[in-house]
Image 1 (cartoon, one colour):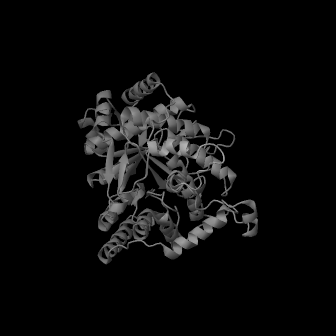
Image 2 (cartoon, rainbow, N blue to C red):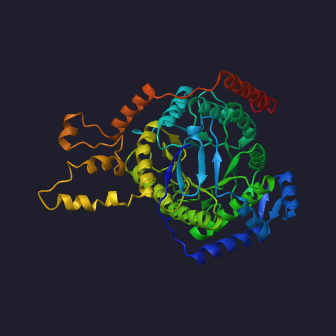
Image 3 (cartoon, one colour):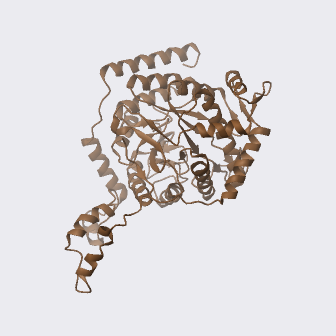
Length: 483
């Protein structure tokens, strides 16, 4: 099982107990009085059977508070997701933090900012590199690219999943558009691996038919679920952090209740990706302070009150167009705030700008940042050995030294983290060894990974079965006129 990072101190809390209770109570008020739209008669009938008042004409379900709170109580505080390789199993929840790879529509040149559609070879190489990175524990459903040269849009998600399973043994998340969940479920089962299913709202307060059908398919297959809303503050949610927290809560708690109606006890991880609108341009304000504060409040609500694991996506997509200082500070400040406030998962590695591009070289640099963040929340050990009082007495004042002591040799590697891609040379050494920067060292590490890393391949029978499933998917979409 993957270790991830264990938070060894209480999460940072930015809300008082009274504020937490107020936000929860007003969320229940929205669900009971305004309700949530479900674009599926099957879903509405299920919710009616479980106590919701239904307006079938408007397709709105009104949730009684007791149904919502009972559904929250049904969710496990932690749950296991099984890989085809047990070493990559995940135990999601409690005080464990995992990192998820980010994604982008196209491949970015991180020095020029130019983007292009990647080839299949480049897609597969990016997955392979991510498999080798210590701090990437799992993949998003669209990782690494939204587009692949020669792959039709309707076949992208299922094809991308097949490539991830062929080039990595790490857990991956499913998707929901255009019935792709049918094929993704079958592909994962053929590979002998569990997916984390996916149900995403269409803010404000609505679930489209694809999302609902995906939830039915994934939950009935026995998979745990990832729920998300993705509101825009000032667009599809109130502009204020408090207001958007309530609307986002309402959307996600509606899906919690719905999923528990399908199969009580289903494991759920709730995602926060609420982003302010840049009112100067109308664009999304990625990696902003508003998103960071929203995620901190979200983590406190879901970690402390609901006891449901959380994922944060705010650090996945910087505004910066290159791998530069702006990219580093945008991603790091929001990821660190997420980790300190109790997130169980953070989407982080490789996203270059907005959701437009990805580069595996940046994922290698981000590996160092993620490990730094993870080791921060692990803190440090307080024991007789680490306090070293006897050693302090032994060494005494100047000219005493700790450099030649066995205690120093034993503990420096335990307590220090040495980044793999950072420049750590003295100035003369740096000047005399080619003046290499972080991207130069990341390139060297990438070449080493490509030359030495190995992934356990799928069995021949599993690979053949996946090809049959992809062929069935193509036939399905051809009949629908989508190919």
